[in-house]
Length: 193
Ligand code: ADP
Image (tube, rainbow, N blue to C red; front, side, top):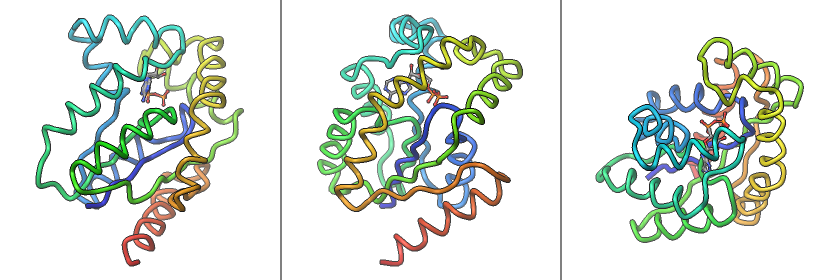
């Protein structure tokens, strides 16, 4: 299986690139942010819980996030692989993902990280807030908070995959198709090994 972890700060373009990668490589797209937003829309218990964290720019607790990701992934068997988008976001989530995939006799192929500078991130998130109506993208203080959480809790996951020799970074600023080509080149190099 080809199992890609797509990584990067809020607004780095993970969702956009994931959609293109899914199409090209025939993968299943698992986005914890999308799962939470669907639950918020349907006003489920999980949605109410997730919303209380998301609205503050905080991470949803690991136990909840890990459980929901695993039960979503369990729905798919006999697939080419997964793209994990927005997960793992903590070391604990990364460890849980390794254990989950090991139980399925597979593993993370690589972490692909989209590198985008902070000014550009803030610009993109505020624009997305205007266009999509996503509440967490409309408030500059919440955006700052999410970027701070990213640096504090999420960036260490990079080291986790670096230690395993699985971390690859690409420049996430530029034309969408150009960034996509950079990602594909990394995947094709890794799969040729
Ligand atoms: P972005 O990458 O733009 O922040 P996402 O759609 O990935 O957007 O996530 C939206 C929000 O959902 C996050 O700010 C966070 O509160 C919550 N969330 C998403 N994925 C996770 C995760 N793996 N662990 C904890 N919280 C998460």
